Amino acid sequence: MTKIKKYVFWMLFVSVGLVGGCTRTQYYDDTEYDTVNVVENLVIDERSVPIFPKKAALTTDTAQHFALDLPKRCRVDWNNQSIVSVVPEEAVEIVRLNVGDELPDLMVSDYEFKNRSVKDALDILLQDTDISVIEDLPILEKITGMIATSSLKDAVELMTKLGHVYYSYDAEFGELHLSGHGKWMIKMPKDETMIMAMLDAMRGADVRNLLVNWQDKTVVFEGDYQTEREVAKLITDIAAKKYILAWDIDVYRVYPKTDSAMVWMDMLPAFGEKNIRMSIPGVVGRTLVVSPEINTKTLQEFMSRQASVVLISQGTFAIPNDWQSRFDIGQCSKEDRLETDLIIGATGHYGDYGGYKKIDAKIVLATSNGELSSFKIPTNVGDNYVIVGIPTHSFVTTPETLISPFAELVVFMSPRLISIVDAGGEVQEMTPLYGDDLRDFLNE
Image: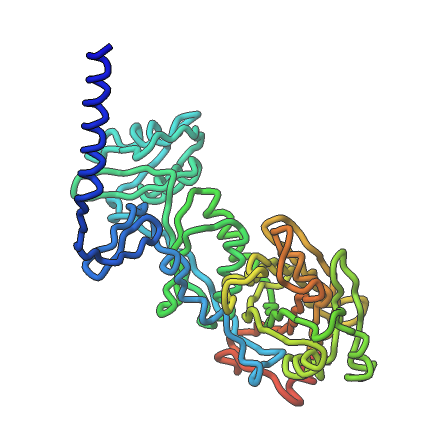
């Protein structure tokens, strides 16, 4: 019992001593610390260097979207717009590039090939020469034919065309290379509107990677035999057309000043019934065909009485008669907005329409989710379109938004006509028609 009591006594004494020591001794740390900011797990002060995670080696967005044709597409001079212009006809030439050196001046006679690959047929043809045939990639196409008498160059061109392949000759090494891939240069017309119409038609035919030299007025493209055929057909078809259709466009977002939608019926007393030609409903929205009295200036003045008006995008696009093209709102957008996903597609024909000369167009509004609405619009030259009643909420992708449910998209479109005339006439460059010249053209 005594030992236990003494043990307890000493334990209590040591505990009290430790507590007493703790209460008597206090340590104060007077060290000063810098204040730092923490931004997304990066500690930043005046002496720090930010450390960022490694980014993938991809072209930056601003460089990716750089395009020399954007200033030409995304600007409309409404004060100097001409509804009809004439431009001289110009030949469009396609030249194949990378053909190499000239083939030797040899003659071919009585040569027949049947169900052979292009390489095998050429190997047999050239077996008594110093020329070797090399396939850059395997070519499986079989050819059959007969050459009675021909130069070597014409014989090789015939056989490669039959096999849908292309050749290039290297005289230094005596090698004739075969490839299923070719490269061409198109010598375009001088007028930039016609160049853009042809570029849009080529892109519409899914011809990609077009390299445009706006100084030389040339376009370089690459592809296979099918690509070459598509482009050749397109150019032949365009050359047969006598008209180019173009549209100048303003795109607005309209915020009504009251808790109600725009009252478009007020256009009738504001402009007069004679200036509202047609009303065409769509699945969503409505197109009003209006006279030249209703233009961007007068339309904005009308809309601003009921709403705040914001210009979202502006631009122009053109198509050969009977072709199709599109205008990307986002490409010419003033800033990133909900509507920048919108595409305005158009097909059109200028010519006889029930005994009248009209522009018969189909305008399609679409987003990445599909078609939003479409309108078939026959109009006289000089008439404009106003597409109204497309709710801005059509472009909202979230369950809720701060945008008023009465806000809407308004598209103003002004069609133009470019007539392609005989190059032997008096017209040497694009010439707008005004006054009597315009009346004479429309009355032809």
